[in-house]
Image 1 (cartoon, rainbow, N blue to C red):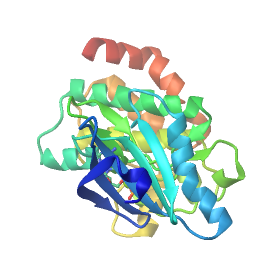
Image 2: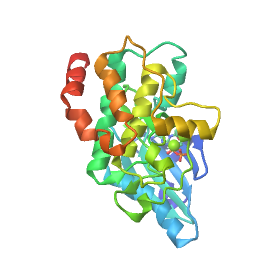
Image 3: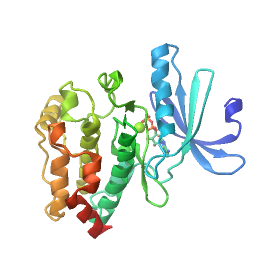
Image 4: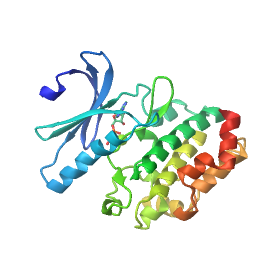
Length: 269
Ligand code: ADP
Ligand code: MG
């Protein structure tokens, strides 16, 4: 906590990862709470750029469904990213709290529409998120969802998009990535399809006891059907988002404007 951070006081540590840690802070003058992601900066020049990319890309996003960037500092091999605090925690925790009690269709569609709007904003800036999953989607105190964790994000068509050093949980990874093809906007759509499926069933669409059989299921697009009480349009949407060829998968623009989905959203929201 060097000079730059003096205007904030530490409340508690809320997350720890390979990057460093995430802490809840309070601004001494306004009393507002924020989250600070504290990242250890590497000495190596190209890795340094990777670490800074998260702050740069997040700072470019301004949307009600993306965690708001406030400011960033660098000092003594540390990078601090100050951002909006989402007090409702992440969507994975929220899903786990449900136990076996399903979310209502209205609730599923509201959150889904919000995450698509956030992701469309990211794609409209020619950025890919590349780590969309329920653990990286946060809830505010009024129940709005916001996309966060830009630690894997990259600019579309940059050489970086090809070299996806894959680290996270494998459940959300699109078939083309296992096939060593470049990450593209439709790979983010696949991941959001996984989150939509999770909201509908409280389970992952692709689950297996080994890597090999997981990858096989993903590459075949083989998932257990959604419960039949869910609206047909929702089943159709999931099916489209899980097309194994990214070209056949709808873009976020198509999802948000397609006749079927907008009708679904109109009747439920
Ligand atoms: P990583 O996944 O790279 O470790 P994240 O940015 O996802 O880093 O942050 C780690 C954890 O910190 C999250 O899983 C979440 O629990 C918490 N967290 C991060 N950002 C926020 C935020 N804006 N509001 C609330 N909690 C957050
Ligand atoms: Mg994360």
